[in-house]
Image (cartoon, rainbow, N blue to C red; front, side, top):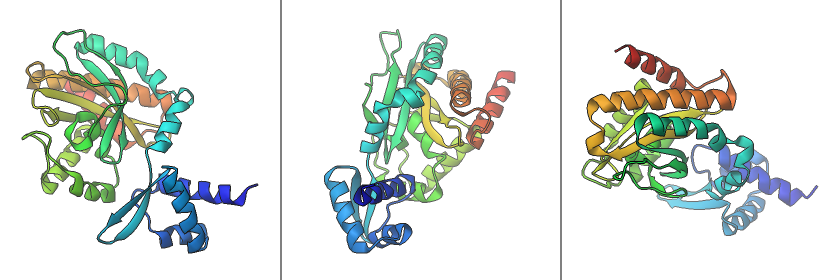
Length: 268
């Protein structure tokens, strides 16, 4: 085998599974390689856009880039997140009359990997491949809430406002994340676009990791409190079913919480 290729793949896998940027010394130590060797590998991987170099006041760190997701999306038919989600996205749209989104997280943003538009003439407009600040949209908050604490702490530097309703204060942001974890779903109240609201729930893989979110969005006037409660029950049910399809019974606590919340709302 080509040793350079093996080492390069080792670097990519290490960064892909890390919940924070890693320094040159950390990478070299973890992989048992010389720092000079790792430095050359990182230079090549950065030039090829597989790795992002992050410079901060505490030094330089390296992270896996979105290119890995782009490659993964090319074989999405195997993971088949979209295929598993399609039927439930259709059901959500027909049950709610609102636009449905399937999103994944890329650092501080969500990427819309699939969507079904509302039949209503007035609706939320997005496009597949489009992006939004994760802390400002429901699908983003539904994923962020189940990230490691270190990842949430790093978010503080990226909490830029999109509207006056955006949550950008660190303490308030952490309270919002705790609320999402407790209830199992997230709500966007005009935080990305002032006139657009949304509700979303996390989707888990077979290892119990939150890998995506499914959500509804539409004009604020159609997302009154009683409607949000009903929409939350719909997205929670869809997220649970999709997660079951992807991995069976080994679900993240998020889905257990989501199921309990859904049952409680249906009884209420």
